[in-house]
Image 1: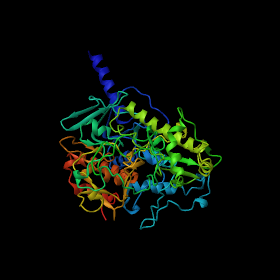
Image 2: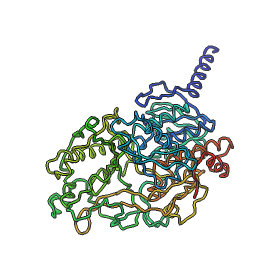
Image 3: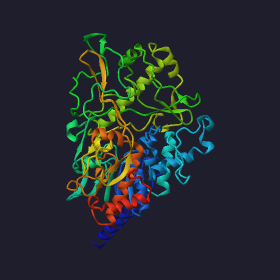
Image 4: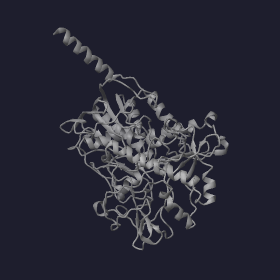
Length: 561
């Protein structure tokens, strides 16, 4: 009996040691193999996004232990996944660790050895911010994916942050253990258990939030729900130019409905404007391309390639449209951050509605479907003999960069999840808050970008033409504050969780908030609140705001104009 107890004690000590001081895996391509374990920290962060990493840095800076449980092998989400032409709005409201991230990228590009494919003088000072008032902290807002990923890895290494990669939340009923309203632990599919006092869900999808029983919304609310104008269906509203500007027939035989619809067009009738639905704005991959002959790979012909699915693009060109290259935004070293542009482009419209709540297997299928669509589009534009010769000739100058995403066929490892679940929390950010028409209480950061939503559906108009719907771009008159309550679940649902990415917002307000600099700001603020809640022995919902505000201001967060 004594021997058995001694062995049990040794096993317990080993588990505790492994949990409190595990080895940090600094290699993003290294999949950790281990025995199942119970791992403990003051704060457990689920997610590998930019907001997850700034949250972890802040926890460590405030003296608490933290573990990042990342389903991704690569850290940084979209910020390191191809979105290098940063959507910022008013840069003066970006402070704290978010600004530090962009400052480090400025420092990176001050090093001559980091200009491999282009002279720094050729690029000039594109994407650079002005110095702060004291002349320091200069920033770079436009950058290559691998440079951004290295900054996140440096954050992890310098702060000795424990990261477990390729760890996926068990989303079954047994995945999250709660006592009353408080999460005690969660399990991953590998069998490991993560215990903490506070938890932060920093995923784009809000998986931990949902598994913990927190209320959320998917899709577009009706305008009547929050007294908004730009939510819900918005047929006939064209604010970005991503629509069919001239009549184009949707049918296989132009003008003949009996011939059937072309691929990528929905047969569902359009609903009345302002009504809510389950549709979400389209996803795509933010493509990093190169036009340097020594650093480009021709776009590959994807499996199952069918040129017929891109017939609609040819009809767009037949109308005289020639805006193909307007969103090949230049980033250093003769590369681009290429985003959707025009009526038929990289956005895979209408093919992501079930992604937010889908199983991992189904999500992988959706992501693969997006990849094949987008690769097929690129191959079509570069090779199909029916393409306009001027466009095809220009496309043939571009390819995938050899020095990016090396372990993923040079294709981005992160799809652009523009929105998924959105929490319904203590406070809901809405259109009137972002447009300055309603006061925002207890600010923890700021946003300033346009209320930006991509198309949600492609349909047939009553006149018998194809059209897109959902493209909104409404600019606030000035930056706005983001409420503390918008990252907090209702306390009766969960009393030790903060949600800075899939936060509490209406669809259209989220269109502005959902920018990567803001996710980093909210990640840092969430971490500050989590640590202060531990120190004050209260739930985050009961944390005195003035205590949080003092810490945020000390750490150079911008809270209001």
